[in-house]
Length: 401
Image (cartoon, rainbow, N blue to C red; front, side, top):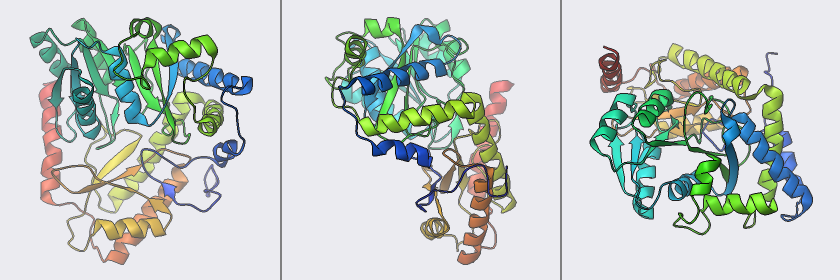
């Protein structure tokens, strides 16, 4: 790696997007959108087939029983499609929430008429296998468990293996929202059993927004016929039509698919899931170490830090103003993310996208200079923030005692 880093900076001079998606993309991915494609044309059908095959292959061990169903829309569309298609109308979902996206899944269940039990762990506490086992034992009506792989509200990587083990030990089925983790964090069905998962084009595979995809067992797809509450979000209907015709049922985002094909090829050339995850983890480690040297504190300790996005507490110094800090960081070429914690003030910095450790070093330098411009002498958080973090450590000790 040179001092300038592995990748060239954004060619149009735009800021780096330090968010969990949309994110900074390669210029080659952007270039792929310059050509028009006919949605019914054989060339575009071949692109769709290549994309579906590549995504199934990305599952790894155990993926041979799965099929890929791309669908138009953002991640929330895909979560709704998954719940509405794989949970029978007389089923019931245990929704595991420790942030905004679990809570949104519970709201989705309400909206589409799927009964659910919400386990709300608050802003960041992880749902554990023991929690799942206890609830499933007490409620035989629950048929499915919905878990968030990486909850980007806090940046926590939830314990999928133990959640899966508890789910299937109780004879239920697991559905996973892996929106911001798939492509960088392994999710092999041979290691962690699940029936279906959803993700999005504009996350760890480094495409652009416009569609997402379902990876589901073919047996579950076959069983989903006639189940959906929706015409457009019917996963079985989309799958059946694609299997029969090779086409999307309704107008596909052709340019976005072309960009995603290029992103998939770049993902493979980099070394696949393992290499992509290693780069993101290195981004995180370099950035977190640098921010800690400035006095910032993370919400999570190393046990729970994901390689996707990291939550930092706001400094206690009264001269710190997040809105001004955000603008100063943007002026230096970096767009960061507001916090979503309800108990203490925070902000988030993403680790994913077309960037490397050299960029993350510059992020730390930009934060240092921005603090100086604000007149902030110390980035140390208030005592209340550290007390909040201690709750997670105490809970972990209880789990392992």
